[in-house]
Length: 180
Image 1: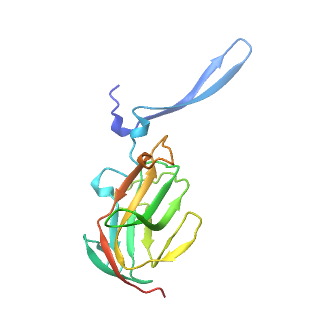
Image 2: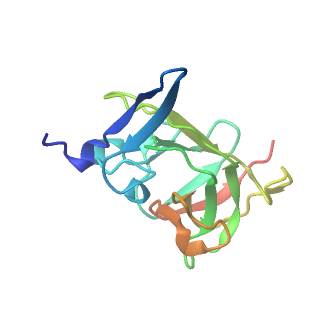
Image 3: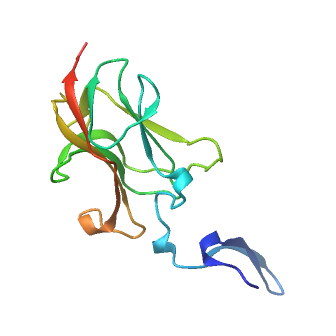
């Protein structure tokens, strides 16, 4: 058989073990390829994460300046290929990628299907972000930022930053924030 690794072939079924007096079924699951190399985010450009400004539904160009309020936000649209034990969407400083706050945090994520015309997941950048994984918030301040998607690799150590797959958006600037 010529099964190509990029197609991520999974095998599953049961093996029957029989004796003269008993019979049992043993489930199995297999994978062709290197399970640790499955990327969290799709590699096809059509499914790459995208940022939109909700005022006019336009794609966010690099280094654009925005005013944020309840109705005018930045929208991240994305899909992902595989589950992750830890997965976060972060707001980071554009100059050094240091964490400003969490847009969302997941202690576990399942998978979501890729469809030709839609994405399965989205997040809004509002006038606040989470300061920790327990739901405490702080207000957004004017500055230059990027959005980072970070997911723990299969068999990765959550305490090792190198064990996370990361994606960074283009930089953008928040000039004014209306907190009402």
